[in-house]
Length: 353
Ligand SMILES: [Zn+2]
Image (cartoon, rainbow, N blue to C red; front, side):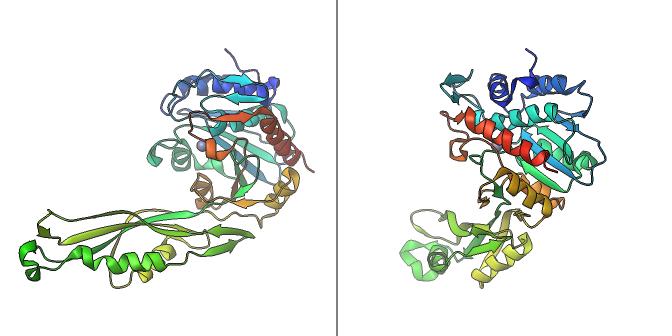
């Protein structure tokens, strides 16, 4: 069934939810979005895989990207969507077809926005990062993403959430010497040697760091621990797997240097590192955005695709309908009034002169 972009973001949310689009199976939804946008005179539409990009080209002084992913986590008996009063239940209602619907309604409606707008609906956000459709566009079509500011319409309960913390995972390893536990004095116990690592973690006071006016809470935690050979062997190795969630005031390199300092004297090896993203709320476009949508900006703690924009030098925030704590839950549901509130917020910003 074709999408009716003039129906408003609430009706569009229902329509999008009912087109199943689990990661890797977005083609029917991408087809519907592309077909609905094609022929709108003020938009240039580009299809890349199952991502759809629609851009105005009005020669405005600045350009913003407004983006959302069209895939969802697997369905679990929660499609089609079910409307109960103002509340729509079903897979994707929160994460994030409400946001995608707001984008579609405004892309069609705003023929003469105050800034040029690049609308991006992309695929495969809910799976391994190397399949991410936005990441693919960054690699293959970076010119399509050029902008001065970006908004990701991920669920934030219609509040502005700026930037995101970075995340670093390391192994802190101790080594010893194996021996029979009956003759323990012949060996060296690597698990006992890990005790100071745990002491340092337990004593660590995580920082609260202000970045562009937002306070980010950090965390340094052991999340896994492994070691031991058998119940009668003195262990020769112990690994404490540590996750550092760091404020976007630090680069990944600085975060690693900090962790190496905390564990000075121990062997530290990196398992995974993703840079954080500064909220960019000091840019004039961001100030306009906050003034138009209202409310107070909050920091984003989890890592999101805003970091991909930050890596391109584009300040970015999250702003979209839906309670983020319901994302991926089988009972995810969204208030359609909140969807419409986001539509009004973005419209107010994009038409501000
Ligand atoms: Zn999402």
